[in-house]
Length: 408
Image (tube, rainbow, N blue to C red; front, side, top):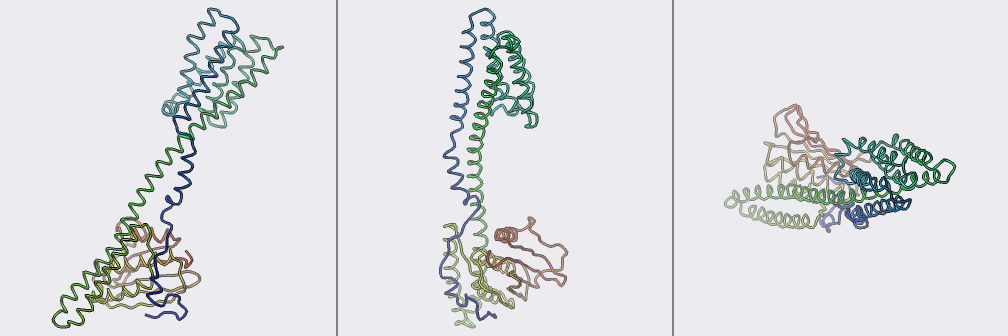
């Protein structure tokens, strides 16, 4: 094993000085900000309560304005029949649970609202014209933006004309209704949109929580596969070798048993690191261990190393590739030779592993589903901005290739 003289990780003690905390998943990194957003956003029920309280206040003011103009059979009939129907249509345009219904019938409901506002406005004038703001809010909610704004303007114009016909265009009723309809429509629309966003924030927070749990489960399963698969394979091979050497070479058997104890302790430490949600591996340590495991499996190992310092995440990712690659050689191949090269050129660290343990095949792995280990390696390398490929070679071998920036 050839090492560069300026390599900062020449010894095992320096390489395994201790685990460094690592950022785990994107969902975990976004967790605090998302939790804060969800905490400060009003609860969905409270947000909807605010919307309907404001709407109820506007409707109550509308009834007062109508009855303030005088009590007549027409006014009573409108307040008893048309006003409740207008409220029902407005609720249908507001509640989130009716979204599918609005997607299908929202424009027809909007047309009904226009009729129920404009026609009574011709009879009652400005006293009923205040209902136009709700219709304008519905137009902004139901229609696409490029149509909603012109439709809102048209509704304001209809209310102004209807009020002018009833009250006379020389009075202040027309400009009053224009301003009143604009303000009411914007207020109601804004409150409904804010309530919808508050509901979306809480739903997104729940989705992110479920996603974070799923990612943590996948991380735990992936790390256990990468760690224990390699360690248990090494323990099995060394145990079988020690069993065979007990009588002919007891000293060699004792060495293998000592190595099994060390591997078991390292596996236990790795499992504890997985439970603490972080894990830091050394590429040099894994290469040294790989030589020992391959030798115990009767595989001739050739290791060449020529690279500078690696960042923690890149070091761990490449070390994981070595672990999984050696596990596959030992457990799933009939290899007699394995060559491992780690080189650095033009700011890219390239890890290449070749073995002669498979028959020639044409397919090549590119990150598609097929093996848990290879899928895991592809995901790990992608997480550090690297690239991973694996596949057969024309001479009947198998090759793993991983590349990443040393500073990743």
